[in-house]
Length: 442
Ligand SMILES: [Zn+2]
Image (cartoon, rainbow, N blue to C red; front, side, top):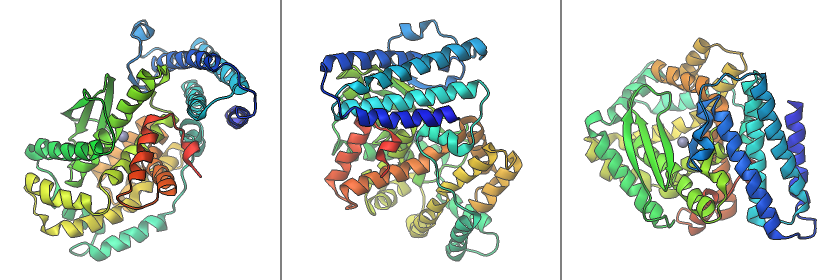
């Protein structure tokens, strides 16, 4: 734990040092960085042998992966090998503090450093070390999430109580009301296709993508997540949508934008196009799930919904196009959107649930019941959410905190004006350059 903190301190020193020294041959730096990047990719693939979730995407040289196995037992030899490799890479990076770097190279340097730190944390954890929740998020995702007490969530529940139809239990009334906005399963495909088409058009109005980019959507069951983008390389994704729980009408745009345009699919396509292909920066051909990159990915995917649909444009589109396609009555839509707006206040509830569960303060049952009481989740939805925490741990902060960090960064630098071209420019830059969460925070 102390080691991580001291390494974080070194990062800051090295980044600040890189500005002061005399320039040395640019190509030398690039050569050394490329070698570190290659070894970083191999390290991520190696770790993936012990936790398959760690490698979320890989489209680098097949021979680097060819002899790797999965579900290997993590023993002391594995620990020694992997932690030595990660230390070597960190040391090599530190030695590059002598070089003069331009802005993009500095971003690359900082990105690699934080990614390798996350690898090192994962190696510690495979070896049985568990960090407290807030330290785990700092080591994996480069930030810590704020805390919220029960009163914060209960005040939103009081607001919902005032506007929801009927009387009595608010959770039941919320659930009954929302059931009117569930997309019938047989209409899912049409509704999603319309949402994807709209999100794609809006994105292409501002961001140029390679002509061959595409993805396919598959509907699946029995997963702990709501949807998943599996990026395959060559500008192609497979997006899986889980139909275990009811899918409400607003989720169509959520998922189309988050997983597709201008979210995960576009993020991966731009990294591949601008960094992996044009610059041959091989570290972008692998995606380590438990790493700072995920906060950028989830944060941009969530904030991208607002970038693509500023102001009332989203509700207008849903009411005019998606409600009829789903066979839903748009008459109650206004109240539905008010309810959704209030429900956004629950976004940090998952962080509280995860913090208390993972820090051992609550057991599973207590966590499920807390989510039912303070985020008005149904038992089924709370159970599903806790399964997600059990599998992905502190990853949950990436959605809400990630979105707030990206939103704050873009509004701070580009203003809040809905139609601002600057917003799209900043957003595209976040999607196509090596970014770290710490680098976006004021
Ligand atoms: Zn996502």
